[in-house]
Amino acid sequence: MNTLATVSVEALRATAPRPPAQAAAPRWTVAQVEALLALPLMDLVFQAQTVHRLHFDANEVQLSTLLSIKTGGCAEDCGYCPQSVHFEAGVEATKLMPLDEVMEAAEAARAQGATRFCMGAAWRNLKDRDVDRVSAMVRGVKGLGLETCMTLGMLEAHQAHALKDAGLDYYNHNLDTAPELYGDIVSTRTYQDRLDTLALVRDAGMNVCCGGIVGLGENRSHRAGLLAQLANLDPYPESVPINNLVQVAGTPLAGTDALDPFEFVRTIAAARIAMPTTMVRLSAGREQMDEALQALCFLAGANSIFYGDRLLTTSNPQAERDRALFARLGLTVQGRGLGQ
Ligand code: SAM
Ligand code: DTB
Ligand code: SF4
Image 1 (cartoon, protein in one colour):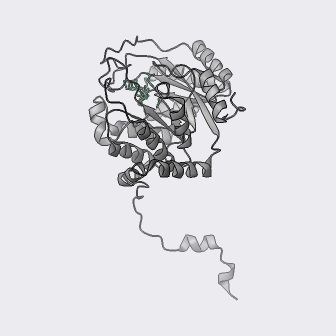
Image 2 (spheres, protein in one colour):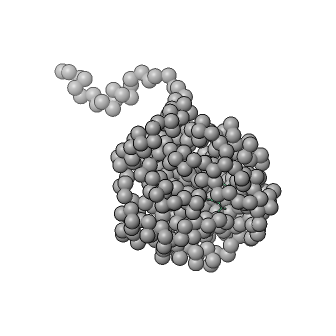
């Protein structure tokens, strides 16, 4: 009798010699991302749109609304941020917002058509004394049928688990720029601190929202460095916000030469190609972009925006104006009907 015929493929695989364990090779090198960024724009956008269509409805956009639940007075010194206590940017510090006000804002966001509600606090790190209050916000907002996202600074493992237990869907924590430029932009924490919190978020079972900010005076190689870091997170983030610096007087980066808008489009396109299934969010800086540029960003693979007239401390296009843009572009809203 041919015994082999009765042995399952699984059993054979289980006994087969295994290759020696190797560190996983990075999916993307900085040079590879830089080569993408250097493509002729039409080729790059075509490639990004092709990848986009393999995984998404190319005419659909997802809407997230932001709420600053604790503004200003932040101990960190991120050179782009008006909420740092180190700079005079005219932002008044507030205490943590009461639950009923958060619920009111979330209900308004839902009524406008948002499907995700992102709550941001200007904290270096979450304190144990605030865990119950932010957890109550997660439960409340989730109870409205919205996806929940929070960005509260650095976390410890038990805090990440508490947020997950409360039902938090996404935690936003950006790498912001390339590792080698990070120290020029922020001195009060390290790149590794950011990576550590991201690992805790992942370990606790939450979705990761992690992106960056361009227009800081970085070069193309830095933008490639940021995207390679993001794409090589294993797994890569489910959401990747790409922010264009909103220059606020009083912050050290105010007065930086504005980024060429086509470089911004290239960054979006390369993010789409390097992270094919992520939601690429066209984030801060939309108010300063015209509608044709935003359309080009959607063509390059952006499929999510911050929606509502405020970001955290700065302004964002009016919801009505965005709805008119969706109608003009024939974009539908994820979870809603055309242009609603
Ligand atoms: N404090 C938390 C932290 O830094 O992780 C959460 C809030 S912080 C405001 C979230 C992100 O907003 C930053 O990582 C940065 O990418 C973005 N951001 C802050 N100020 C900005 C600005 N002036 N223009 C564009 N993006 C900005
Ligand atoms: C992200 O990447 N961008 C958002 C959100 N995550 C928290 C914040 C943008 C802030 C823009 C400046 C402000 O309004 O203060
Ligand atoms: Fe604080 Fe976040 Fe602003 Fe940095 S970006 S100063 S951590 S609020």
